[in-house]
Length: 172
Image (cartoon, rainbow, N blue to C red; front, side):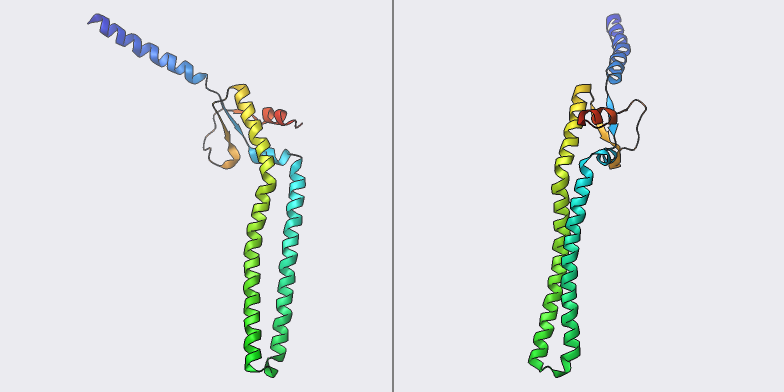
């Protein structure tokens, strides 16, 4: 009976010490990926390409709207002279044109988002690869993105890996 009690006491004292020692060896890191993206030289090129694409889409929408406005004005000025058949045809044409403009605006927004993802994917891939490499090389268990807003607490024991990732990416 003494042996069992002694064994239980030893386990009770040794297990927390071993468990605590293992916990102290766990390495956690954090990085602000949004801040890192702001440091990447490619971001200016991507931003410019997106602005150019957005301007092209806006110009097309503006052209369609101007064409619609001209046809509407022409219809309003001459509607008294139109026969019922011509008037209905012009009204249908204006409604169809308005619907096409709305569809184009919706499609343009989706296109812009797709273009943004397409341009950002290689940059995000480089960043992700660098973070993973730093994590593996330095024995981190987790590296949290503080810009994502999911981290509600960050201990002083969590290491900011920004300098390591910047080095991995070759950023000064």
